[in-house]
Length: 305
Image 1 (cartoon, rainbow, N blue to C red):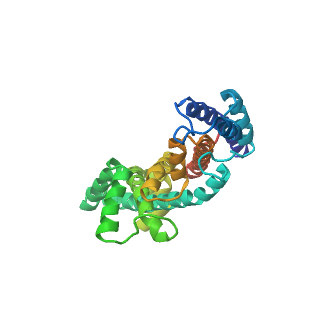
Image 2 (cartoon, one colour):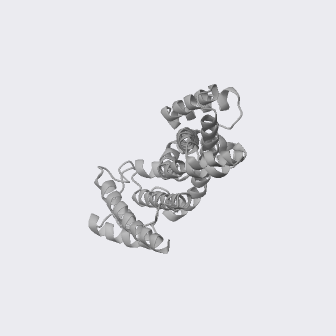
Image 3 (tube, one colour):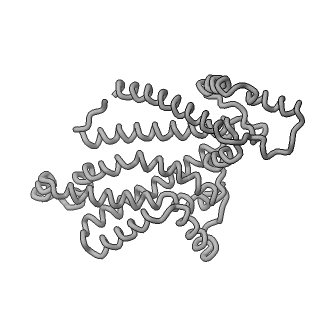
């Protein structure tokens, strides 16, 4: 395992460098600059502002300068958020985005696994048809459409949850449910398919033949093999939750990293956009590594390399 983790660390460094390089030159290749929408500055002020953010240097010199600072986990000052460094913005938005992601993933796992288990044990009954029908609709409906419907129903019609903001659990519930719902639908279908396949295995029939309770057979014997496809899906699900939170944080006015990332991209805040991209890359890489470790634990036939 140590060799596997060291190898992953090396690949993460290479991946971060590649993502940083591509992102840096892409955002500098886009027409316009961070001060194009501002009022016209005098020549002296313009030179001082550009010198502060090293925008007066050639692009390749800017690249090496900022790459050196990024290697020290310092992304410099934000261009648009005065008196804030990129690290400070990330430190403020990171807990909010992580809380939203954890709640959404927990909801997706609990609801998806429960629906998948019930559907597989009640195959071809009205429960199975109902749950899988809802799952199909959940996969087809984008989370921003679901969020709009939920706002109309649970905010304006029934007035159960607040419309936006951050600071209490009630303000987090609705965006977390909207973010996790499509992934709960995928998990329900994967867990149903996986459990149906495992229940037909010889060792499950042997467990039933020994007189074990059906609940124990399912939860202690069948689920370990049935959950493998779900664990494999958690890597792409993490990426989907990270990208989906960008939109939902704007809809529900959550001051997380997603909102700052959209503002950075739209206002050409180069340091902030690069910093946010690096954080998302690290999160995705770490989650994929955890998924691989869990996959090998659930299925001993899988070897880490």
